[in-house]
Amino acid sequence: MTYTLLRGNFVIRYPDLPRQGPEPDGDTIKFLPDTPALIEALPRPSGTSPDLNRRGISVRLEAIDATVTADSLDETVIWPKLFRRLVPYFAAGFPDFDHFDTWLRVDPVHRDDTIWLIARRERGNLHDVVRASGDQIELTVWPEDFVIAPDPATGPITPPTAVTGDLLIVAALPDPAGADAGAGAEKITLLNVTPDPVGLDGWHLRDASGNRTGLSGTIEAGTVKVVNVGRLDNDGDSIMLVGPKDVVIDSVTYKKEQVRNGRTIAFGRG
Image (tube, rainbow, N blue to C red; front, side, top):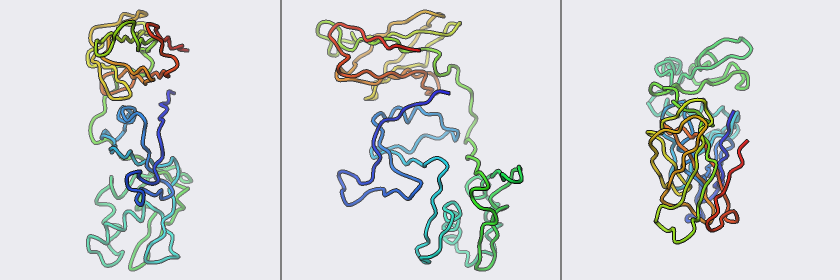
């Protein structure tokens, strides 16, 4: 399995608004990535774009769903997912819980989530673990005893035509000999490690600043292709090779101290 390392900062307060900020609620925190393009390139089962802006993106901590204390009842603690269902339910004008079960079942994606009941080893829905009527509501199964399934994709998902590691970025020349500013003399070398030719139509190279260089042509099996790019940062940079459907095929990073005039940086690849 291949992992993508995301460097950045967790945000507690906004620098320009020191008295405001997205205080963590126990299972969600704001993250500001150094390279937003890496976030945009991550595969998303829902098929939707990430909710990423200049302040970052909200990140849910894996396998954690912190409890919420109801404002109106200081001593009442409630499971967050259930709390998030109750807010729109009462906002719709319902005076009690008599219609909550029916309301849940109307929307199996955003309300009546699919769940896996661990002890029973069977599939169910949120309504199977909630009992509600009158002014009483309760979970009949502890949250740690079932698993919430992710939301289904909003559209058909087709498998990528290339996968991570098919092509590698093996070298870069960020500081060519002579005046290179804007001349497009910087070079990136790609290696096809597969046994078949790989067509590059629809592929591109992208750096940490979001600059793109479109690719075309074909790399034959076991051969390299040298690509001229518009600009690489001599103070260090990250380079991504991105295939069709925005699948990140490879990425490398070099530091300022590696950059020497006229010298090619070779990325040791295992």
